[in-house]
Image 1: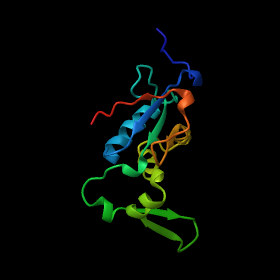
Image 2: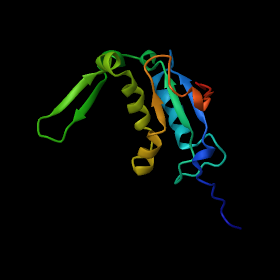
Image 3: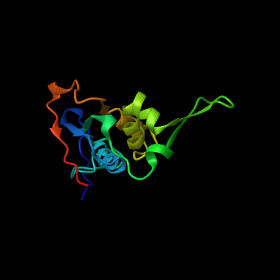
Image 4: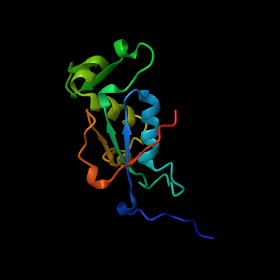
Length: 144
């Protein structure tokens, strides 16, 4: 008996939409990462990109637990000596709220070229508007 391998056909991908308003960041990111990988499908294969596109709206309204709003810092490093930069979560939320969700999801995807390809299917927007109405995205049910 041969092992079944699903077709890696980009036309079979669906578009999902998530409203991040009031959702906990880590739980939301885990669910988005599973959808990007295709783990919610019966045709999941670890070495193939069988996941769906995910559109996240209201990224600036995502919730965090504990004292993360004051204590969490994001580190950026250019590669030059002494050029580490740290940005607090409150500054990141004010200036680039989409990067909060993107960084959380990126940490939950594989650390290889397949994971980088999966991350390109994530579209994050600051407000309630997005430019993907033509793809007719269906709502991704928030489990937690």
